[in-house]
Image (cartoon, rainbow, N blue to C red):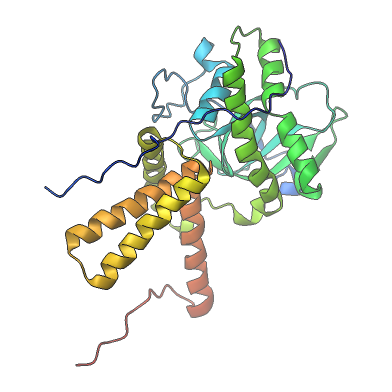
Length: 331
């Protein structure tokens, strides 16, 4: 099986070129102890799904069918706003955060027990643990393990070296893993291009985040476990938007999102009707989720970070939760 690098951008699913009219109203470096950590057996979030909408994460064991092959998972990840690498996931004691371990630079063999790992932003799909929140866990570190079993946190490497390590764990490693498993799946040149494109879009931002993962991972936003159910729902909404809107080019998606924000601002300033406000606010919310898909990030984790940040800010400033209040209008 060829492992040559193809650098030709592939076509990404997206909206038609013309905008549709709006309807009218009618590891140690990570703080994990090797003794306490549990190695996960990552499963595909698309496991058992043969449709174009892999919204249900079953967490069922791999059946060994072609749909579960390493290259099929990688292709689906590329098309579904995710990315796939070969590595090992290790959970913390509570099973709510994880470390991704990949092969060190120059390694000629795969890590023992390495599997395809699906990533969305700084989240990894790790349904191998019952405590996992709908299968997705925040990464708190990415490490590179050498053949002599030494380990290095990627945060200690320059950005270019981090990108190289992550790219090495991408399509080339997936093809090697598929060959070692004896899988028959072979990607066409166009499919390989789509996987490469996903790597280019996702791995540079991920490499840049390596030094901040441990300090920004959020598991229980604001300390309120009830919010976890809301985050699962938000993640499903992001997937629905992906299935309906596809993925535009970043510049075009951002332009449309800003246009909708401008229209909402105009409607608010003019004091327009509630129907108009709902219409414009709905467009802003939808496009915010579309931007998450365009950037291959997890909207639920992004929301959790913003929510927790404000929660902690209020505690630091006031010692309690003190929501914003409007100034009393003059009588």
